Image 1 (tube, rainbow over the protein chains, first blue to last red):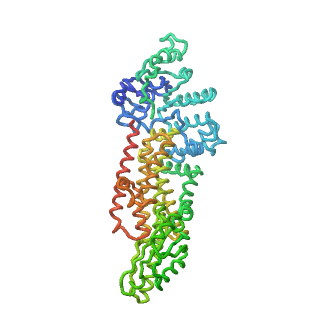
Image 2: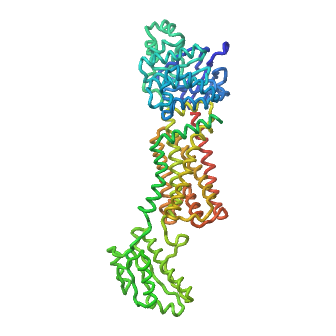
Image 3: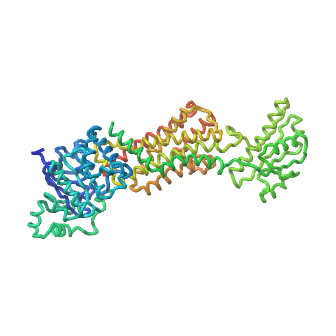
Length: 255
Length: 368
């Protein structure tokens, strides 16, 4: 994985009828990189992620994830990526342990692997006491961290995190980012979307999507410099403002 | 395969931990059998009967005493003329009437058919037809007895019932109830459990996993198939033990037809969930799209023959109509595939078309 980028999108495009949700998007994300994928609601982030995770076929351009082509090798991609959505991806009426076991089974881990990794996750998150409690009964912050660990259960090369920290308190958010860094240090690439622009500063590099295109890409420092701004927040507002209008097409939103 | 087993196990946990839903699934059929069997019993008792006997003779007296002895009827008046009956019906003092023609026993003695008019208050159509049927049964009973004694009698009543001579309503409602229970468990529960995963976001997690769409569907749906089966077996057992509903045909065939019907209902549930994204909408969709037709257009409660033609036409595409017909025929008439193959083919065709459509709609969702 040292040579091939973890994510390599070239002119990636998705049209819905006449509406172009993602318009010739080109970017690369290297192995072990934490990549911030920013944009206003409706800018095309979700559509781009759906294409990169093999859920949606591109209508133009191409992209590889973990070395596999999103159009022709979607099944292989699914084995090599993890995914955690802004909406909760664990089952609330299963226990912590059962959730881990379920996803372990889905990703074809052996029972031994599942046992080992369950122990590791419980230890890492200090959830040993709660292993047999229903997920519903543990606090939201723990659940998000658990969801992240479960998304990494099968040790994917790339993990997609779609607003993983929405609704989480600042302290837990900080802990969550520490988990992301730990994973990155082990070589896992993370593509993160967020609406908390202070979090963008934690990323190695960020891109800002506006109206289906990548309007800016670079390290947080580069972007601040280029736009002569104090923070990514400023950069974002300058870029995104023209399109934060009622005319944002509904079709781009998920569902 | 282990992935699929894991999915199945998870779904079983969902079912077992959602106590309220589980209770509903299990208790509903049981309660309904009791409700339909006792409370909403369409059987009648203590029917107020008016008798019109212009020329009382030993035969009419014998038949009249049989009406009194039947336990169902209570004679409230004996009249000479039929035109006096109108008042009794209008006031509701009589629910049914038996009118012998004049010279009843003379006709019989000359070997001619003797006519008897059986009237029933049809404000409640069901009760009315049941009263008629009971009365006819009493008269037929008399006739049969006389013939056995070597007498050549021929009495012509107005109404005859086949297969369910005593008009036990439980015999008719149990097959319909099976369709109803299967629709609830298969369509409603499937639609709700699939949309619940969409609402909570877990469906996305499954879709980005290496699971194939068919595995997701099977994993979601198979446990409900089992629950549906348990419910059906429960309904049949309860009907046998508590209400003595006959099961004259093959149990295997009945369960096989039930399986086809479950597949049809499951597919409908998947189709409904593919078009909706909230549990509430899915529930409404399942109620309007499957439960109501099953209740109203399957012949479960209202006979299809007595519907106006547009409803009769619609009932043709209601799967429950065919299942109820098949289940009734198997349970009450005891017939087998030799008679039921056309209906079975219709159900099979429906299952295939709907399964294909639901798999397609599920795949299509992945793409948009």
